[in-house]
Image 1: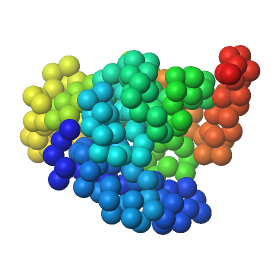
Image 2: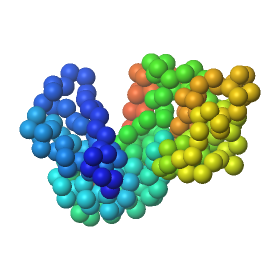
Image 3: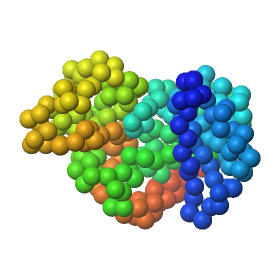
Image 4: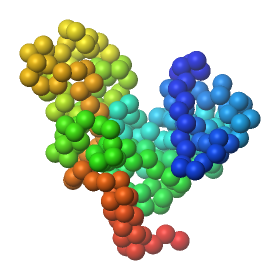
Length: 242
């Protein structure tokens, strides 16, 4: 894992939760330094992990739950197949497991449950909601995109990152000929002419997961949740879990 000083922690809470019931999600580092103070505050700590070795280390230091970052997650991503990853981690960890990456609908949620997960993250589909603060062009790009439009590259952050190919092209970059690992320079690598007629800010190069294939329109969050529940129930009726 990355050095402990590089850990990034963010609070993840449900509406109405108290400070003591908060769940903190940590990534890019070991959760060890924050476990004691957060546990003292009554919080749970879930560690993002991208490999079996990461999962073993996070479990060993006492993480309450593990978020398995698998191939297909938007932005900084994992590389393992979720079927293999979940079953391997379940072999040594009996705490809560969250599956992240490629969760496009309620059918995928039911599949995650069958694998042995307790929860799953859906990110890309919620970007394309009316309540989302994302740029309207970003939302429309997700509607028009499929999983084939997701490019895995290290050029932007130095880490394996899933980005929307059309947004890279709109920024004046060639997705098939990106600079070396983490070497994109804002001033030099983004074409000035492209910036004048297309995206005007570096932030207009957008990430996305393989679940872009499941984004068919810009919905309200209530609509998306209701749709996901209906899909989950349909999957449950088709494949019963004992």
